[in-house]
Amino acid sequence: MTAPALHTRNLVKTFGGFTATDDVSLTLAPGARHALIGPNGAGKTTLVNLLTGVLAPTAGAVFLAGEDVTGLGQHRRVRRGLARTFQINRLFADLTVLESVALAVGERRGVGWRVWSPVGAQGEVLDEAARLIETLRLADVAHRRTRDLAYGRQRLIEIALALAVRPRVLLLDEPAAGVPTRESRALFETLAELPRDMTILLIEHDMDLVFRFAERISVLVSGAVLLEDTPDVVATHPLVREVYLGE
Ligand code: ADP
Image 1 (spheres, helix red, strand yellow):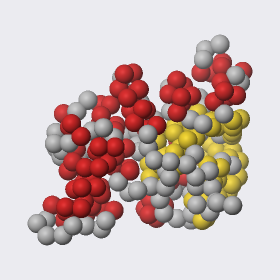
Image 2 (cartoon, helix red, strand yellow; image 1 turned 135 degrees about the vertical axis):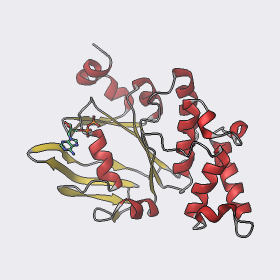
Image 3 (tube, rainbow, N blue to C red; image 1 turned 45 degrees about the vertical axis):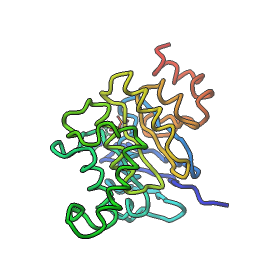
């Protein structure tokens, strides 16, 4: 049997006497489109930080493709195929879209800032960056500075930067936060087309987007997984209806 792309076993995180992550076991099969939802304070950010290695768990373990990565720091997890996007905008405002993405591709290929040197692999790097930009439907703005773009497109660049590391698992942390509705629809259409050899865990407040994108949803309440099921089942759960659908 293939190992899950991402798996947590009985993860616990306490801050002083407070339990922010309460015995969370998640399993994402390769290619999964999985979402994590829950009210404010449910522990979503803490869980993401445990997955990425920003925080060390109080107990339990994190596995990437079957390998125990619990003791590994963030960079090592990235090298093992885990990438994330951030809620915070982290773009180089003065670079163009192509320059930004090429830098990230160059970083993965170990050429770093030398991507612009007249010698070396810059042709291949630029080709790969251009392909990523195409995938994310940013080709028309490839030569514009990231600061001049609409917020929704800046979020797409952040996703391009995450994809530049060729992740096996992509964590999307509120990709639509602050993005106008029409743009966020377009963003999710693009996300829906990402290749299936990539596993995606989405954290998102907008339930419309979550229910359309995810094939499985875990509902986190007070640090624990209240239920995990398909969108149809999750949508009919009384607590989900109360918290998200205002019933
Ligand atoms: P969410 O992302 O779902 O809103 P968080 O993971 O940010 O939830 O927070 C879950 C709970 O853990 C909150 O009650 C928060 O106050 C608490 N918490 C998060 N980080 C810390 C910390 N470093 N120290 C103490 N409490 C924390």
